[in-house]
Image (tube, rainbow, N blue to C red):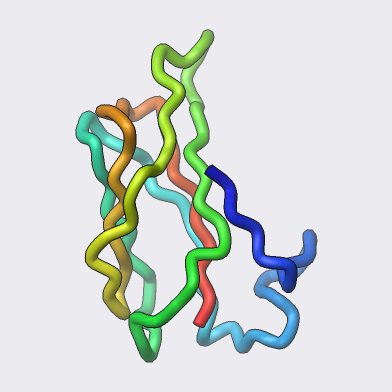
Length: 101
């Protein structure tokens, strides 16, 4: 699942018109569960941020056995959020995210 905000432009470190203190991006290596917790390096000022990009990437060798996708976002807080998937992941998957206030 990829959600793209029209303000985002390739090559920028954060969306045009958005202060970097209101923007977070990163990656989480998944484990053998159906969820992943994203923790920001520094907290945002509010939990009302938008998730502008959320992508599950298969990093293993060969073909992925499961077409893993995000299903639900839960527990949004100023320090991060939890993502639930359509099945159990493995460490061969990575979750890339971008959020903005």
